[in-house]
Length: 67
Image (cartoon, rainbow, N blue to C red; front, side, top):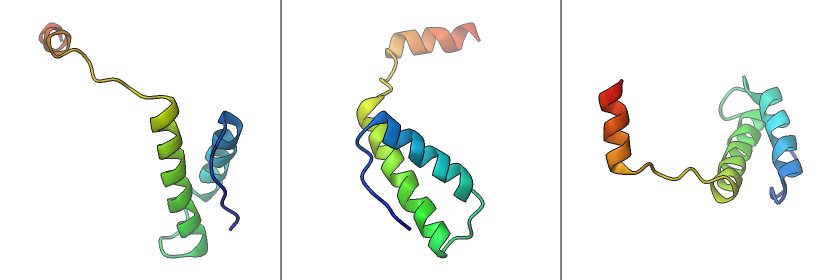
């Protein structure tokens, strides 16, 4: 397991590819631990670089009423 900080979009994409390879890893194994750490790092990177803002409450209610 070779984990490093995710600093760029390329680092993030590489981590996502590795996550795909590890997706079925058993918990509490080396692969499972690597998957857990990578998921945490990717989540932190994406939260910082691609934030999803909360919708305007009125617009959200209007949208829901139209559904």
